[in-house]
Image (cartoon, rainbow, N blue to C red; front, side):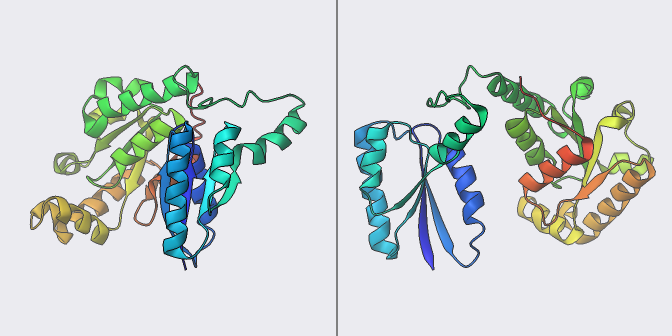
Length: 271
């Protein structure tokens, strides 16, 4: 079965998409096409969204699923006239929350992701930190790190650092273990003073060779033998130094980041 799911918002649409995708992932027998429509904040844009929803209904033969975080009731009425089945994320949860907390919510556009929020600034600062400390670029700022990811090249360190920064405001640096580091058979000097911040990422050598082949096809760097040697030696280094590590082969970046947060006891920044 093919269905279309729309994530519609008068803001970025990230909240609707995140929750909507998590819910739809429970329906493994259905193949969904996801469409995010952000900044639907005028009647004209709402009618354009309705046209897209109705077109999807005509194409699929099934009513599209709509997850929305639209606050303006005039716009919601326009969307409700479409051929889709609507699920209002905010009112679904806010009404019971208001009863539980005993007060009214502000129910304003962009409240969570607004540029004035302390969480927003914490995330931006963390992203800048991750980019400045990517691939061992600046060991001088390791004392500011919440976690330093280490492992072979292409084991998932950079995307994990960026995700930790964007989602949790975590200051995450990363350091790729190179041939020179492996020849010394010791933890790199720039990392030794920060061993309590270290966390290792490893990966299946066959998968690593596939990833590296896309980057440098036919090179020694991408050969299976080289990948096997590097992974074996790095895992040995991690075990000798009692550094916790995680095999990322079959894990999404979201799973990797969540496991790192749990293993290192990180709570993230709120500002």
